Length: 453
Ligand code: NAD
Image (tube, rainbow, N blue to C red; front, side, top):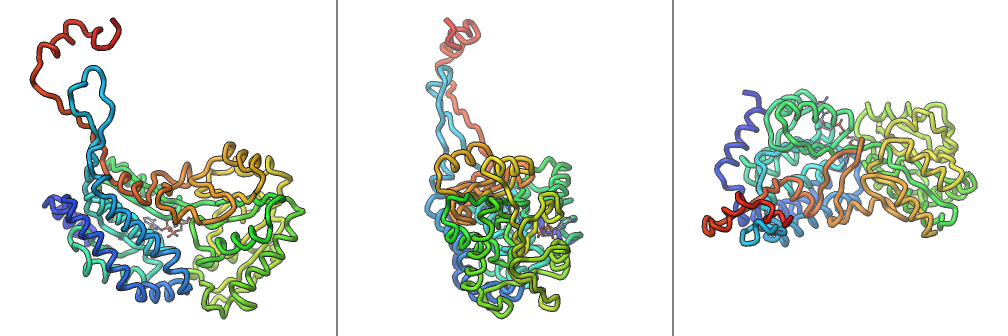
């Protein structure tokens, strides 16, 4: 038996033992996961430093705080979430119990991406535990140190049969995908997302696909460009641009470009100093393949900011390109690196047209103070999430469902949404066997009960 098959069997047997179901057990596992994150924070930060040269400030903010908040919320709310949810009765069921009962699905497969290797594996795992499932976790092979550490840590804190970690790359993932699961929770690229859904179809397994794509950012001329530039610069270049909801490109009026470029330049100086390469807060590209991919996207352009690189360190400077043609390759695929193209649009209608001509993005960012403009963007576009006057921050609110639409994914998670996503919402109708004379009348005079008399 392959290691992947064994993990599937082990998790299934553990699930069938029934021990994942009691709320006390789920709470205990959630507390243990919280303990792991708190006790091992510095080990996690070291692993991220090795994988991505992640800044010590970004690890808590972007990776761990969200997980801690999700765990806290699940612990506080679990009893309410897992309780039967009464629904309206009809004339025919006036005396009955009618409710929706969330129940565990079974064994969930979680496949993570490398850019936030902890948040993207443990985030779904919190939902899986809270909902009473077993889960096999497959971290990305590209964030090697984080994956090794996760594999070493998780069994020390959690039930190791219910939540095994299976490392591996493409062939291991393919073997995992041949197994039968009750749900597959996948985070990564749209192309692999398609393969996941195809494999899931063989077993009629439902999927959550947290994918990517190009998230646009529109800057209206009326806004405070200095503040907008500061926020965009943070969201674009944090984790060296390798963030699924990073603003991929900026749409703005040509008159705004110069000021925007100047403000981004100043902000970069403030964040990373004159030489970002020597800043402890500026990341690196995950591997050589991605380094080459990003470099090739920049070919033929003269950057207005940055452009320097060092293959030996997989370093690419924070780079800004202006007047990028909408048809260029740079504007066809997700950049997923520290390169920010500015694309000229004539006004807000032009920006909306530009956005709507393309695939629905995971995130849409709008910097604008004019309420009419904001309303127009809210009403006339679609995206997984929309954020006005900032970037990335919607991810941190676990009351908001996080997920894509169209090509940016399906399904949602964070907070209660994770619990719901990984639960079956069972319809329950509990009647009594008494009062048959009343019940009998439905056969005699169904119209009476349907309220048509
Ligand atoms: P990826 O699709 O290459 O890899 C993700 C996972 O799939 C890895 O665990 C990998 O082992 C596995 N995999 C890769 N190729 C496979 C194949 N042929 N068959 C089966 N499994 C395979 O994605 P990535 O490069 O790790 O991540 C980058 C993408 O993920 C970007 O598009 C980004 O926007 C997206 N992303 C989305 C979110 C989100 O929350 N929506 C978060 C992070 C990243």
